[in-house]
Length: 111
Image 1 (cartoon, helix red, strand yellow):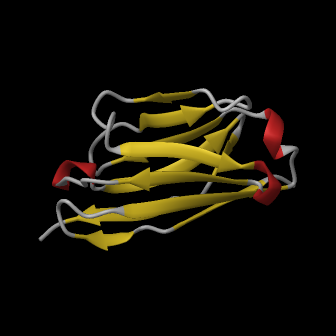
Image 2 (cartoon, rainbow, N blue to C red):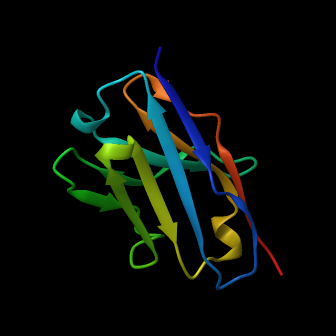
């Protein structure tokens, strides 16, 4: 049974940083492209970043230069390092691949 579990969200002031983690189980993690999405209240879910099995990365324009996606295949974990956070980054962040989604972790950027 495939499972994705996100962690690391929380409340942070503008300009602050957070690192999200997504631990995968029940699958051969290393072969898949992994994705981070986010969804703010009233908005559609949007793609934030992706990382391929060969560690090629892509980012939404809104987070380029501030967020970094990475993966540790030995730990079956994908990360999202978020720096210079802005109030508009406030959302629930989800880990995803294939047909699978995590439960999400809330990120709130507010003073």
